[in-house]
View 1 (cartoon, rainbow, N blue to C red):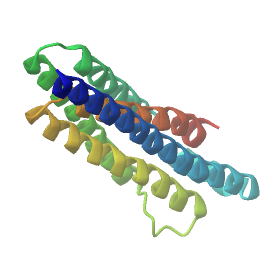
View 2: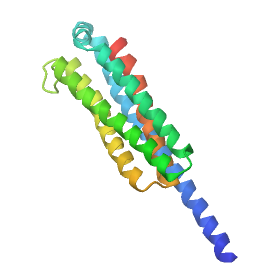
View 3: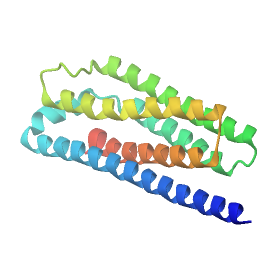
Length: 182
């Protein structure tokens, strides 16, 4: 009986430390993107003509399609912890990962269509590729982790990764209007 109590106490302590790690990671991501977007907004105030010209080159319809793709992917990620059986969890995780990979493919197509490059001479293009590329790296990494997690789903890992996946969604939902609409 003592072994069962100490085992349950240990499991709860590990779960609480996992929750703390999730929130540390989530807030650090939000702070990093907030700093990048703040720099983007400040630069747009100093060079409004450059930013207006840069935004005119963007493909808003592609970005909107990518927003829908990411939200659907997030919906599948939200289903994973609630799916019950391991098979359904795997399907939800794989669907979320597939959405992430599709987002990456569409974003790369968008970069090509816009001629976007970090080597561009204007500050808008540099910041645009830096910020969206940083997000793109997070989506790619997250999608790969979700796909790998589908092989060996565990409640703790699903909770951790789907929470972080939603943070990636939130970041995009803030980035989209700042970069494409303001």
